[in-house]
Image (tube, rainbow over all chains, first blue to last red; front, side, top):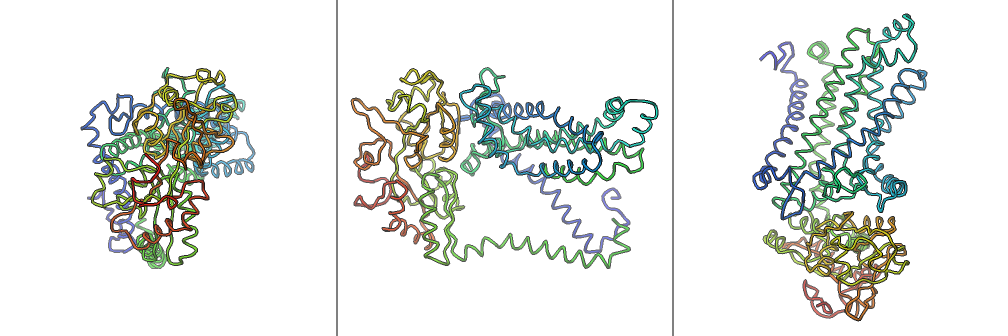
Amino acid sequence: MRFLFDPEVNWKHPFVLLTGLTAVIASGSVVLLFLFLIVQSLPIFSAMGLEFFSGSDWIPGESYSVWPLVYGSITVTGLALVWVLPLALGSALYTSEYLPPRWRSVVKATMELLAGVPGILFGLLGVSFLAVWVQDVFGLIDGNTLLTASFLLAGMVLPTIMTLAEDALRAVPFEYREIARALGLTSSEITFGVVLPQALPGVVGAVLLGLGRAMGETVAVMLVIGGLDRLPNPWFDVTQPGQSIPSKLGREAAEALGSGLHWNALIASGLVLFLMVMVISLVGTRLLNKGNKMSREDCCGVGGGNEPSVKILVGKN
Amino acid sequence: MGDILRTHSACFSFWSATCILLAGGIACSIFFLPSFVIAEGLIRSGGSTTVLPVVSKAAAHYNRSHPGVRVTVSGGGSGVGIQGVGSGLLDIGLASREMTEAEKKKFRERGLQVHVIGRDAVACVVSSEIYEAGVTALTRQQIRAIYEGRIRNWQEVGGPNRQIVVIDKERHRGTRHVFMDYVFGDPSAHAAGVRLVTGSNNEEQAKIAQSHSAIGMLSFAWMNQEVRGLGLIEGERIIQPTQGNVDNGSYPIVRNLNLLLPAKAAPEAQGFLAFMLSENGQSIVEDLHYVPVRQSEGSHLAGEVPGIQ
């Protein structure tokens, strides 16, 4: 029992009891959500079997296949990552290594503010400018495509990834930089040879957490992705419309509520999304913690001040 | 944590008590809020975005003249309206189509009553660029071929050499039901040539206006300079999408605007329905370019609106 109940805690104190209760409620809600998703999606698995994952059509009342939605989700977030990585990592490196401290806090504050901008605002921008822009630039017949959604998502997760990656870089002890400089290394050698390798787990974690946010984004994607539950033809043509899981849920949930298989199929799609995001977030958080802890252990608390902002951003996912 | 609690428990207890009271208060208010509001006469309505402009305008009038009753309106589509009132989430469902057999069966216990408050026509609409380039009317077969993906370029129907952006609606939308019923003879037809799927009338209107080569379906009230309604070629005749053609019964894609109430509706909900059907309510229907029902004699109950076959 020792691993569950700390014997030094006064269990009779009401505050301890109450906080304990709230902790049980908080962690229990996650378990409940997971159980709910599984139980509610069982009927579709027994009705469709593996075809739920391999089919290609989503026609309510006839057949349900989550594959085009999974494809859309992965394509859109994967592409978003490709666009956002150079930008986020570049600016994180610059902010952490070269920017004067006063400006650094300004940049950080701005980025953290930007990370909290609700998705719908990005969606409005996307639908009024980005879609038109993509249509003109790529010479398409219509601008609501997987590509447009990936651009939009890249913009949305840029601040999250940038600020978390910057924290990870910052958590590398200053002694390392000082010693490297004393050894005669140039700034760029210090950055790429010393700081970046040390901060790598944290940086990867930051990227994965950003990815988790991108994958769950609903309304902004819904407005620009095209809403077509079909694989593009040919499959790699991202200038065609598609559908992601959250966008599908957003469009159909209210109508399908309590209507048998249709509802179960949506819940099962939600379960698939939940699992994808969960894996990404778990790996991301673990890497992030590992990276920050590793750096902090052999320093004297230089990077410790960054932790609260990491926590806040993690909590948003 | 343990250390802190044992040494400073006295100073903590005040703050903890305050926090808990506050949290409890918030939790209770969230829990009890709906019941208080309902007691004040809250009527929740929602559903079709075709019926929505009428009901929200009427609700604003009604709320002003009836303090103590508050009518709220939300969108979502006819499917959502029927689903909502059937499951008790809404007091009044808005639907711009009739209930399907499946829906009738599902909500039989609620004894849903369908009340027609007006009529509306659905036009096949195109981007203004296409209309101005000469495509001003299509046959039913042409529209069908476009939606099936057999016709992919405007050139094939006398327009410019430009690919067609075929815009569909979410499958439960009322506008889609009547439009597909006319084009395919099947309200839930599968359209293979579709490029985009949109939700509300607003969204579809915006996307068609944004595009230079789109075709879609919208109720008359949503047509404007950028989103133009096509004439329908039936045999020798071209039936233009005009209010006059709806009134004289020659325009073929017409549907009822329905309010759905459960058999045991609250008196406040029935009061609002009565207002909707009164002279004032019907003038709102007319203001928004829909066809009022009181002009036509007879019952306002579902199914039988004079002038529609």
